[in-house]
Length: 211
Image (cartoon, rainbow, N blue to C red):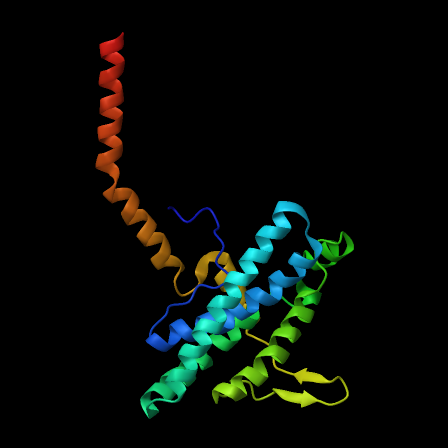
């Protein structure tokens, strides 16, 4: 409540329109799928089965919201503009979901050496871009990256880099919704004070009666 403890806040952005629901589901769940599929392939036992279920759920979400966006793109000019505006805002935060660049990641080298990760942050980010570009073409939206282009030699896409200063701000607790999120938790704690007080008083009375 005081803000001293850190919570998982790598994606901490407001949803301002109906289209945001679809675009966040498409891009952020897409990033989550890229992150989680390698874990399914290297995990065994209950944990591995749980990860498979998580990936299936994420894939369902992504297909569902992709249909939502496709419907909006077949709609009015205002709906298409709404989708494009959402893509413009969430493309870069989605690419941040994989963590910092490999040469600035404090954990990637060790995680790779220990076999915890099969793919580096940059490898996963590349996979996300290559996976999303054809999906964007199907939808008819433009990804907001002037450096995005096909590299024939690499058989993959070149692309720009997110604002890593913004990334560090978000995970440090200074994202657009961090203050709001903590304020909601504090309000819930304050509003529930009477319940805690009543429970404490009841427990004290019961102790006196049984003494």
